[in-house]
Length: 461
Image (tube, helix red, strand yellow):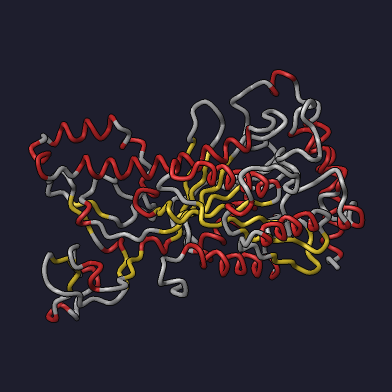
């Protein structure tokens, strides 16, 4: 059973949540018709973005849609600044690092890259110790060492043959909060995403989708798809900028000023440098928490339907953490645990009423019930899906049933059930530091790495 402290906090949490949901239902019509919307509440405890690797992860906020409040927070692990030389042949045609024998007693900063020779350095080299030459032929070098601890990334227009960086998988994270609260920059979500970024060794992009009732369904779901498309555009812009900034063959006669003008016209000025330098969108994972799991599952379906239209983005797996599923026919856990800890069934139904319009409100809405027949695409095309459930969560049985349906069509869909756990046991502010929350994040990392590891290196972590 949960501890006494958890039980007491649950009572206070439910009282506060009920009060806030009732206030949300009285939101003015003008606010509800505002398409810009909001992605965080004034009462939310927010963690400021920190572009320095103070605890091994740097963060930055980006507002990606000028017409809505949609934003993202990028979590970049410091491991992205490390180059692992897996094989000598991989870097044969690229810049090679060499340490002369006569300089072995000098400081490590004396290491320089050579255009010739063999690799005599240790297997791992940090990028902060290296410099780069500008792709426009200038003699100025671009230092990757952070200024005052702040990592700014590098311009995607740098010479492709001089680039040494580590590409990491990308994880889109969608926070919980019943569609009406929570944010991607809350203190609790910031801690959780930092933990996942370090354990999974991925770039986490936390989505700040629009909240209800100001923006009802399908606003939050559309925002999730929009971020996935934005990720693909970032990858394409980075590649376009590199090719335009490094003309070869017949294009070599272009004046450098013209190159800059063309590249900027096509959007290199808005290329996100962290993603351009370190993101590998072909290894993309979706992770949804509570109602965020519903959004993640929807985004996965849209990614399947889009197919190659999303290239180079490929959703290779998804993680559904205690999904916010419900249905008109109650399951055993919905009957037995209807008044469970933190989020009871009555309050969750109220949240669904705030999220869905009156005309389309139904507990069997496609956004709420994954088991209704006729949903597209067929389940056999869904990506591998890990489902995390808690013993004392009334939504657990429907999440397990969905996982069983996926396994019936040969989709890898394991279930991790945690004993004596409650809804949001691994992401709620009070429970984030518990051993169970840490163990859950580690279990997720173990499973995710099966699908984000480069083929042939599945056990390289």
